[in-house]
Image 1 (tube, rainbow, N blue to C red):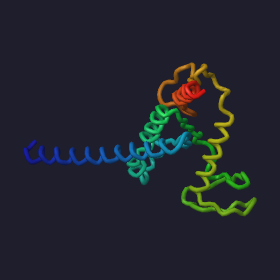
Image 2 (image 1 turned 120 degrees about the vertical axis):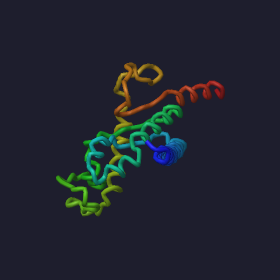
Image 3 (image 1 turned 180 degrees about the vertical axis):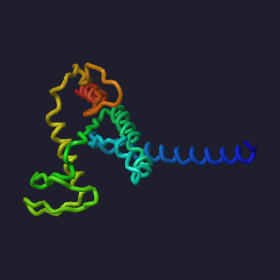
Image 4 (image 1 turned 90 degrees about the vertical axis):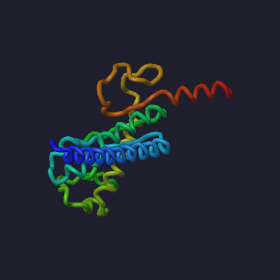
Length: 184
């Protein structure tokens, strides 16, 4: 390999590293902002590996770094005593009317808006999905507490890898009890 080629390879590698660092920095800053302003964050557990197989969307999906972003949210919420709720990827968030809960059978990806045949409400696909994901997260939180947990609220059995449904930490709970003891 010639010196010019080696030099050009180093320059390209440096540029790619800078782009990667800018993306990581943005994801860290965005996740910190979200965690600082919210105690509970609800996300949809997307099949990113499957979505990347679509050659038309692969680059755009990979560039967003969804998996890394969810991991950043997870550990930052854990440190702050918050909760990350993951909605199952098969939950029909886009197909469900957020007004009357009517579910349409099919909704191709190219259809960005639709009208509910039951109540006549006009929906933007993404806005409707966001409202349904929020409602499902609230439902899951209200039914939470039936799983195995110890006295501090931590899970008894360790789960390998990224936890699938709901994550919480007792750090904030302990801080509140200390404050209650000092004030009381």
